[in-house]
Structure formats: C-alpha cells, structure tokens
Image (tube, rainbow, N blue to C red; front, side, top):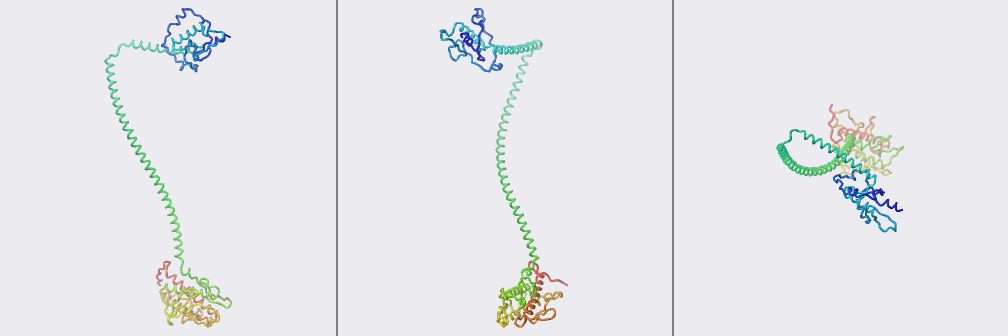
Length: 433
C-alpha cells in the first residue's frame, strides 16, 4: 500500500499525469550532483504552448519543496502511522526537480511522452538554427571573397540621397494629407449638396405624383366630357332633324275621324266620341293654328283665337271682342246653342286666311296647293261638295267629314311651315323656278 502511494507523489508539470520515478533517483553521487548544478544554456527559448500540440493542459510551475502548500502540483498521501511527511529521499528529489526548473525554461518533472515531444521540438529548433548558421557562413564567405569593399563616402552619399528623398516624400506626404483634408471637406460639402438634392428630388416626385394624379383625373373627366359632348351632339343632330311642329302636333286619321295627338275630332252615331275628347281636340287644333300664324307673322283680321285647352274660345272683333266658345257640352241645350257654330265658323275663317297667306308666299310655286279649298265659310272637297262647320244644321257624318278636311289642310300648312324654317328657327330661302 505504501508503494502505491509513492507512485503518485509526483505529477508531470505539463500534462498533470502521475509519475513513477526511477529507483536510480533515490540516491546519486556527489559527482552527479555537481554536474546537475552547472547552468543549462538559457538562450534556447522553447515555446511549448505554440509548437507542442499535445500540451493542451498547461499547469503553472511550482516549487516541489513547498508541498505543504495545498496549491502545489502534487499531493503526498501517507498512513496515519507515519510521522515525517517529507522523507530525506523525497526532499532530495524535490530539490533536484526545483533546481532543474530554476536553471532552464522547462518545468520538471516531465513524463516520458512530454519529454519525447520536448526532445522532438528541440531537435527541430536545432535543425533550423543549424540551417541559419550555414546560410550565414555561406554569405560571410561570399563577403570575404569580394575584392572591392564599399567606401564610407558612398554610404554617406547614399544616406544623403535617401535623406533628401525622405524629406521630399515627407513634403509630398504633408501635401497629400492637406489634399486629403481638402478632399474630405469637399466630400462633406458634396454630401450636404447631395442630401439637399435628394430632398428636392423627393419633393419633386411627390409633386409629380400629385400632378400626375390630377392629370389622370382631368383626362378621365375630359374623356367623360367628350363622351357627353358626343352624346349631346348626336341628340342635337337628332333634334335638328326633328320638326317641332310634327313632334308636337301629330295629325292623322282613325277610320272616319281626323285625329290630332290621338284625339278624335267629330262624332258618329255608330262610333260616338265624348265631348271631353272633342273639346280637347279643338284646343289642340286652336293651339296649332295660332302657332302657325305666329310663325309666318300672320295676324287674323276678324277673329282672335285663344287656345285654352278644352275650353278654348274666339274673340269677335266686330262685336266688341265678344267671346264665343270653341267647345260644346252636348245635351238638349247643345242643339240650340249657336255660339259653338259661330266659333267653328270663325275658326274656319282664320284657317282660310292662313291658307291664302301661304299660297301668296308660294305664288311662284304653282305645285303647292292646299287639298281642300275654303271660301265663304265653307270647305270644298275634291268632288266640289261644300260643307259648313255648323253642327246644328248638319248631320254628324257631314260635320265629322268637314272636320277631317279641316285637319288635312292644317297638316299641309304645318308641313309647309316646317319646310320653310330650319332646326334653329331661321327661315329657309324660297325655291326659285
């Protein structure tokens, strides 16, 4: 048990492995002790940390003789019966290792592996030193073989030249430093200008985007206005081609009845028409006659037509503008009411004045003639049969036929007036034969 404890009394100062010392270290002669006291060459500096890859765990050097200190690199274990912890042999070994560590840069003791590694490193250092020594010797021989040696004056001249070159280079360096400072200042100024330009550019792009958006909106509005203008122009062209009289007063026929705006004018026993419809038709007819007369600047001489819807009337100039109704009411009183007959006869007189005015304006154009002649309060058909607009003395069939002839003449008058004026209301020059 004591031998086992002796084995771990020392550890390697590099890898911290336990060491088993050789028995020859238990005793050595005075001659060996004197050789060990000789100083080891201290110029060889071995850097084990950088060259020995296997020395990964470095242990700081310690003094083995201070083994009572618990921080030393080893521990001595003994039985309780042992009184002296450090024997004479142990002291001798510790003093030996401390002496070796103090006379060299290598701490002792070392294990065999660390020692072999150290020897290999020292051999490499020795080979490198030997090669350097050989190179120096060879260069020294070359220098010895040269016949001419450089003169001191040449060296001084070269030194002076190098000094001047140094001064020139220092001046150039100072000039370059000044130029560098000026360049740095200029770069700073340019960076400020660049920053300002960048801000202005950002501001410009914002304004550009805003104006671009406004332009796009304006372009959309322009396209929309163009579309609206084209639509309005098409509608205007359609309105120009549309005759306002034909659009306002549509005169046609429905069987034996003449109609104006789909209102029948007249009545038949087989097809009775309400007086409300007849009165409305008379109101439309009176309005058309007044519009045509106003268009050709015609003023009626004996009567004045007053359109008033289904209660239109005429004013008789010879009787102090007495009003006669251009509408009927039906019933027994209707058969004896002469005012309605007077109003119809007056209306026919006004229509005769219109036809005579139109034919007078078209006297050079013998082609245009009204289909039914009106004279002396009567209207004449193509068979020279004359009809009087008096419902009290005529049959309903004759009265209805006379009203149809009257509407036909009005339709011709409407067509003539529409042909004499363009869509803007301007008079068209008459045709020349």
